[in-house]
Image (cartoon, rainbow, N blue to C red; front, side):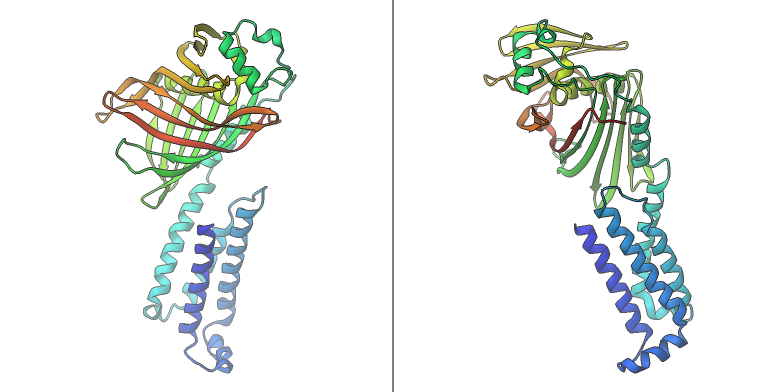
Length: 372
């Protein structure tokens, strides 16, 4: 909401200030004369372009089916018109020119956001490609749970998967915070994710700001490759990782999502189970040529309370990668489509000298078995 009022305030401030300086009179009757002398048609076009720009900005925020980002085009046209109006008197409009410079930076950012290479457009594109039509909905039965350790079976019954459709895919929106280093300040984040179980795909898009500069991160995982990319202001790419280490780490993440957000998939045959005790079990998960393992911990209410794996890589200060224990304690559940699923969880690295809680996520929207 803050950026909405900021955009409105800047437009009002710019137009009112420009009119005041463009029309050096306190007599309202003289305004028409001065505007005529200063190209009234161009000035009116400037005002109209800025108004239409704000209108598109408002619609893009409020409509569920958002149109393409067009508001910046009208801002750009408004800037061109305004520069034509003041072409003989730039020195008088220093404040307005500074505002125009700010608008121009926003316009450049919005332009790069519209390109096919922008992370938001890559996310939507991959979403369309990877979301397969669901040919047949399979209902989970009691028999499907027979091969599972008792604690896992009880968890699936707590979730209420029996008699319900097995999860084929899901879309989820998060909010929360992240930290890049143990002693760093947390930053607020928003994220959305699409996962498809049948073709082993996870697409994850994160939005945040670093020192006031917007940045986006895009993760793409399949059973044969994975990458992580980060861009500042949708222009400068500062991270681009794609290797076998990333593939293994993201395989752990993919399986973690199955456990927390798609528990009905724990009946799949590519998971081998080993019961540890009445409240924990070890899972060995194989995807293509990658095999990882994790320990699932439960409480007396049959809720999954922690997921612990030693097969995920942590990037050290020296930019090396080391296997470090990674866990995701579950803090809260909620009911979605008559199933009890994770609402809130955190992510922790167990470093040699400390427990580094680097992320905290809360689910704000969840949908499973999304139709293409």
